[in-house]
Length: 152
Image (cartoon, rainbow, N blue to C red):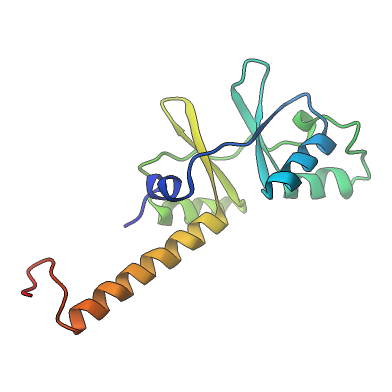
């Protein structure tokens, strides 16, 4: 079983953030520069208060005909995302994303933001897990597997 901590160890826990009073246009420019689909939104004290996603922009700015160079990030960010812990497994995260129709989950421990995982991160982790399983099975079949009760 793989866990959130495994994803953050693999991809790192670098968090790209923006202040809540910044314009949506500035956030979009940063997201484009960093090639990311979401940004953490911080209040004046630097505390996590929400997440801005490309979906937020599409649904709350473009579709409604608003101006991204005048609108503040705080007006369109997502604030109701479920939080996950480092010890949550990836199946639980996939279930949360499916049930809430979301693509990103904030990771918190002891009221501190540790990172963000995306649906792509979960897919990549599943691919890695399947490759590991296939490698173990191949080694076992070839007789070179040394593990749980196997004799080399």
